[in-house]
Image 1 (cartoon, one colour):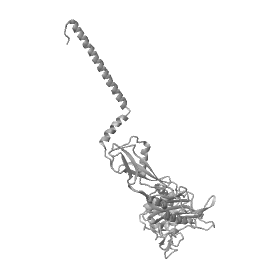
Image 2 (spheres, helix red, strand yellow; image 1 turned 90 degrees about the vertical axis):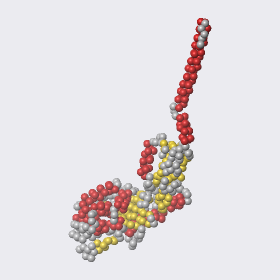
Image 3 (spheres, helix red, strand yellow; image 1 turned 45 degrees about the vertical axis):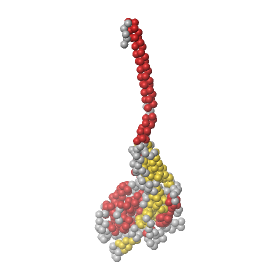
Image 4 (cartoon, one colour; image 1 turned 180 degrees about the horizontal axis):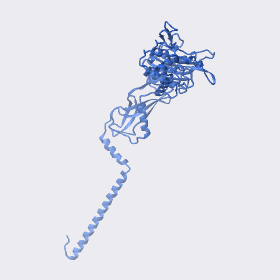
Length: 474
């Protein structure tokens, strides 16, 4: 049986929080890459553990360019009943690209033609994500919602549902508009949602090329290729372990203040040797120092993946059954009890730290034990939770673990009686009660002595009176 004498509100709050996060390990922005990063915004996560490997300006707003199409794809795929159903292509899907807006000219497309009747939703999805077709984005929006603004409203509703707080979409294709923006963190939430919850999404965005049916300008059909250099074998940035997801680029954009240099965005995933990552970069330079177009976003992804995969390993930090603390046990057959972890904790660590732990060290990892009870009273059952331990790395709590009794401790009757006796002496009323009892006993004793003397005196008086009267006193 456990007894908590002063179970404070703050400790209760701690327990509630700990129970919620007991299986979560998060280490936010704990690592600094050893490679130059050109993108202004970066958010890189190990998908196996949820650990944030790199975070840089992750809540800053940037123009997402065609990474907007990730949300377009999510909404479309969640609203399409039959991917092989035909779509209707009207001039409304392409008109905005020919109206003279410099922000919407010379756009990436998949060559869909107004009036074309042999295009399916599936074709549009591949056209959206593989060559980054802006026309495919508008065709999907019009066929699903009837109008582009209504479809964009679905995109914004979905962003809120996912938990995005720094995102607003104003179109389905990502061409520059002042109120079309997102953050690296939000783009991670969006991409992670698609990765985890939208069947077929990764298959589409990991496709290197797609064959489209014929139309007026392509009577024999035609092939469109991915805009993602990380999954293009002929590219200098090709990595065979990278999969998807979406590129985005704006060379220049134009507003009332004039012409501005744009940037590149990229979202991708990597899977190698049992390790899985997702990386979002935003606002990489579009041009190099010589004024030439250069894909710095692809370079960042290439370097960051190579760095992470070569410098981090999954390691056991706290084995199951590790002795981490001891507690005193009152009224027990034993007066000390070891506390152990009831499960092991493993996480992603730099190689050198993992090696140090394997050799018995802990490096910068710290362990903080919080005891749940001021007093532990027998009997105690093996496996009973008596404390919790925070595992701390670089000032971040990366795990909270229960510490449990390593064995049962039965109650000692002798210790129980002795403890109960000692507890009487510890009470605030015990000594005054003893004093009162002594006073009462003394008072009774004094009263008895007084009464006895009075009786003796009375007997003597009766004897004297009897002697004077000649009557024998009995």
